[in-house]
Image (tube, rainbow over all chains, first blue to last red; front, side, top):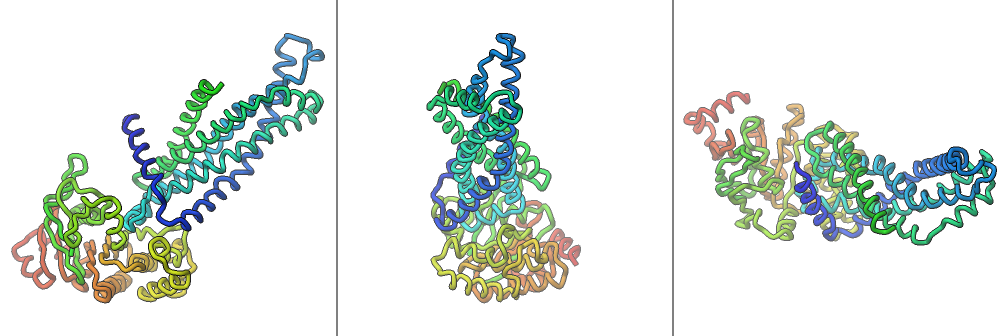
Length: 252
Length: 243
């Protein structure tokens, strides 16, 4: 199937996603369940990845700038720059993009497989026969929960990336905590937070809507459900990186 | 009553339903029979709106289902219950919640009223003490019964059953057949059962539609079947092979 017909199908799919839900109370209970699954159950992985990535970024940046650059001897190098680089790159790139790529693997594959399984076991057909808009019923709570919860996870990630860097700086002794914090403060640009949030909302919509779309049109059996998950993650990752470039070009 | 008029369905260049004209009557068990690959499942899916016909009409009490506005079509769908071949129970819900689901979506009943209706439907299908079990914890026959209970939870006018006996032992198959017969008579609904089980035809079939190679090959009552076999070799071969 060519790219244009796939995009066309996705647009039609989205038209049905945003139809008014049949029952508010059922929708609300599904939304809270999805918010828990997407947000709370992803918290541990986000915390771990943010702390480790923050520490690695700090250590590697310090190593590259101070030792390998050859511009200044290590003892004379202003180590505040490390905090500055870690701060900016955390807000602009690592927190939104790396977090969302990881969440694409966790949440995206999960949504595609869950909806794909509902499709091959005729549960989607059962909704349709009952007169329920099945696309909206199974997808909208997941998309909305993702758009609410993933930006929150990204904000947690930004904070923990910086904390991870701070811990690494302290434990390895490559710089003082004061130097690191001074660097973070000096590089802070409020506009970067806007870019972070724009990326967060767009990426979370991409993750949830594309995985729901992929799962909804699954055909076949268990094998195809697995393939839908894999296909969803691959496509989401490529789309996120493409949009990352577009947003960077437009907003920076 | 449901009428099919010149119904055709193509999947790309494959002609799956060929110019089908047939009637399905209220208050009786209408059986669609035929060998696998004969177009039975596609016919039922086209009738309930899961497939769109390439041409022709499906009339529910003279309303052209596939040409109704989206909202009207959704309203009509709420009068349809369906038992799927694989039961299609919602696996994240318990037995009780599965049966409660249509009530939760489309009625204004209180929790107590819904539970009364759920228990009534479960008792109609002889399923007790299974309310809090997950679909994965119950047998195939019980799943079919939960599927029937869910289908009749709302006051439906039409009940579609796609291979209700598939995967069941002969005894359980008869239990399901009898249930479908009793429900059809009690509620006076139009029941369409897609089956290749001649025991079902013998036990509960009243109006029979025989499908062969995507065409309606024969239509008539159970009493007319034996006579029709004499002049219809395909029907005769199917009936004889089924026993």
